[in-house]
Image 1 (spheres, rainbow, N blue to C red):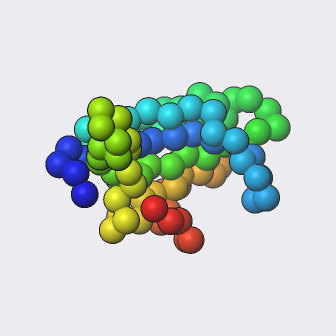
Image 2 (image 1 turned 90 degrees about the vertical axis):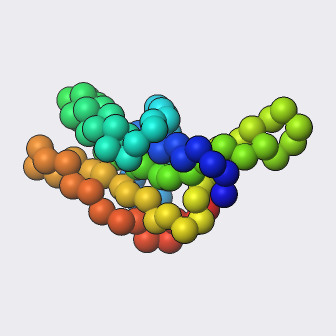
Amino acid sequence: MGTEVRWRAWLGVGDESRFSQIDIAEFATCSAACAWVERRLYAESTRPGLAVFGSVDRGVYRETAPGAPRWIMDPCSVGMDADLVDGQVCWRRPTGRRA
């Protein structure tokens, strides 16, 4: 992998069959990425009828073409998913995530 680790956090809405990404941000630490997801989950949960969830993945920027760095998910990192359940953020390791 590259040298500078970046944590990518994103927020989505949907159900088990499909989802849409509604926001994304990058952070230098996992704790900052998780805190962002938690804040956003609470804010978005006030919108009725939406199933909102978040995710945090570890990666680095790699130059895939001259002058064009691209974020690449760390293939050795599992990542974390978050859901809001009964007003509490529940973090879990995802199943079937691929880098």
